[in-house]
Image 1 (cartoon, helix red, strand yellow):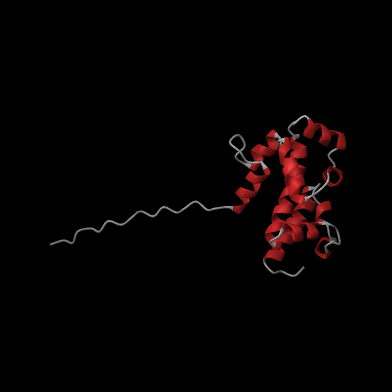
Image 2 (cartoon, helix red, strand yellow):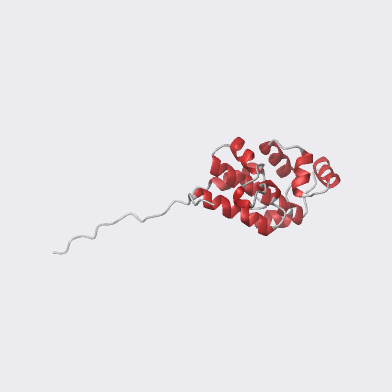
Length: 155
């Protein structure tokens, strides 16, 4: 006599929960229309992404303008008229927001993260991470350094 086959439950892995998703949703980047970073940047960030980032970083428009190099008149007009930022402007805003996000993950508080972002860092040839968002090579250098620090690699 054969033994009956025991039914097993099928395994369905849970989708991973990403803190990153919460960060970008809180910034106002990801929504029903723009479900990916690429789509959001290509379409252009909404004005409130900049407003949310300014609030999160406690940064003035002048300081934001000086690091993003978005002309002040453009920045003020986009915020006042609730206009989307261009693809290029959104890309530099993304780089800044990403460095903020990674720094907060590294230091666990926004205050410590912003202090580090504004400091001259030996591993970046004594440049400030906040000043390294305008080119993809500089941005990648900051991301690489944060990754090394997260893994305990002395630089």
